[in-house]
Length: 313
Image (cartoon, rainbow, N blue to C red; front, side):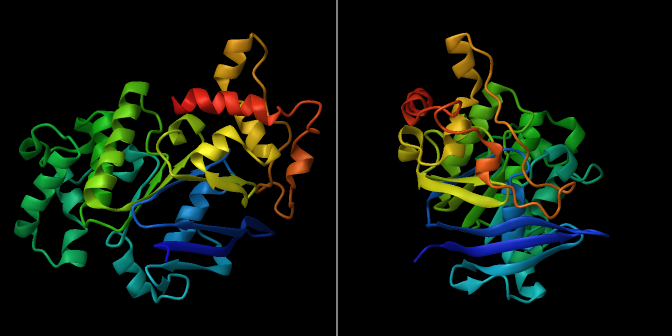
């Protein structure tokens, strides 16, 4: 049985005069120890899917259909008190921006230790050693000193490592990493992704890796879920997706990779059309309305396969 099974998940955001259909019938599974990539353009519903799994919806957000089965329990029907036990305990989450997610007036040690008293019943003094161990595990230098530091004392890469430490301090069964390399330079991105891979193996947890960058997914995810306008466009094994994409939107994502334009000397391909959004709350924009016909502009799957093989090397 899958560790996480999302079945027909639908979410609406109710505005003052309209309703935004943020998610529509989203379904996928995550097995224990598996990494599943969630990819798509900005606004396609990746982060909203993660927030819906943990029931951390924005004001006006409501689940209107579907189920989220985690370790045999339906999270959509759990009382809020039980959900607080799941969040941070069984499911850890790395949020997009570590600078805005970290509390600027709390020390690093206090923030990393925060989940331990409610989830593991530890006192503040008892939490010190587990926090030091986790800081060492995520590669923070001189952790004894960094315990008393504040977020503004750290670099962007170190702040991201602190976010990972906070998400993993309770040894969760599932880690949701929402754009964990946002605003980091290429070298630090590689370090963070390798760190998540290593920790997944060492801790035996499953990972949902959310990104808009197909290069991040290549070689790191076991399976990939491609999202478009709040829907799942395609789900496939990573190797299969990169070599034999089945959906026109997936092919268009490969065609829009910057390296394709750089290698051919052509202009960078831009996927035409707009997905449904707050300014079009009632829209159900189908893929065919946002993409031209296959034989005119959308690349043939052989071209996408060549791009995928370069990423997988």
